[in-house]
Amino acid sequence: MPQPPQQQDHPGTYGALQPPADHGEETYRGSGRLDGKVAVITGGDSGIGRAVAIAFAREGADVLISYLEEHDDAKQTARLVEEAGRTAMLVAGDLTDPGHCRSIISQAAEAFGRIDVLVNNAAFQMARQSLEEIPDEEWDHTFATNITAIFHLCKAAVPHMGEGASIINTTSIQEDQPTPMLLPYAATKAAITNLTANLAQLLGPKGIRVNSVAPGPIWTPLIPSTLPAEAIEGFGDNTPLGRVGQPAEVAPAYVLLASDEGSYMSGSHVAVTGGKPIF
Image (cartoon, rainbow, N blue to C red):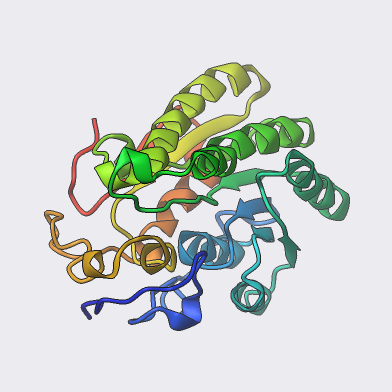
């Protein structure tokens, strides 16, 4: 179903998204690939984060869901995790605060005793038509949310991670094919790719794997809450597959990288872009 022009206030909510996104609520079937694992997912209230939380829970993982302030969306995600028979923890707050990043990790470690998977998925973007339109504070906020928070989360999590643990960072096709109106966001996504490659080498001796997933145009509340309304209609049509992607179509890549099936995958960069190449 095509998406009509629409806009939301940032950070956006799932309930206002038209048409609704598919997170795999009715379709994802687990097969025990994450049995007994503990996962922390930032930005887990909706979009890709919700789809990953659903998939992880149905594969057997307990999940801590970090989110900003979208309480209703986060509660819905927690309900879906619990319906899969797993434990869901909700932690609200701003990832630009290093202390909050450390608190997320300490709460997960205290509740579950360890962390097996860390999914750094939360992100901020805002479309601006010129360099002059980008407020200084917005530039700083984008980097603090999208890249600096990953540093603080990883630094705090590693002491609670054992051999075989997995860190998965969400990048974007914007790292490789930047859209000018998303300058700060695209720059942070390129930085995440570099950080992932470095961390894979730095943490390899500990047996901790670090990979990234690069989505293309995916239908989430982030899109209508950060792009102009005229950019919504036809969003994703310029991909070789000719359509926008759904969060449910991205989640399986995270499952692979989190599971023991990905045991020799580290420093990998998985593109889920509807056919657009990333080099």
